[in-house]
Image 1 (cartoon, rainbow, N blue to C red):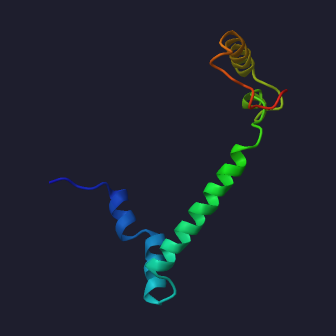
Image 2: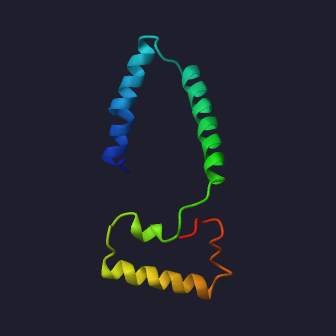
Image 3: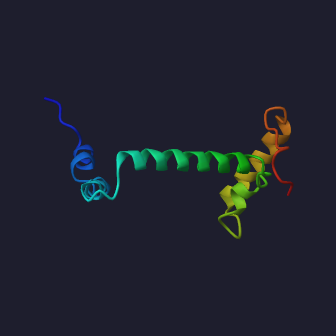
Length: 102
């Protein structure tokens, strides 16, 4: 006998979102048709935003290291230098033209 993990059983039977959805449907405040319509609308909106964002210039590669810390830790500084060397040495494989300049 194979048992489902507890979390899967819980998600199917007793998840708060599932219970709330069922409650809304029982009250006739929500339906499968409305859900499908909302999913399609949101999907189209998200894909539209992806298209817009895809056209923007990406942040500078150095932001991988500087967006978290004011001062780089020694190991991050080392990694940054290694990345810069790799990108110069293998520039054919690391096209940074879509990224902002530093």
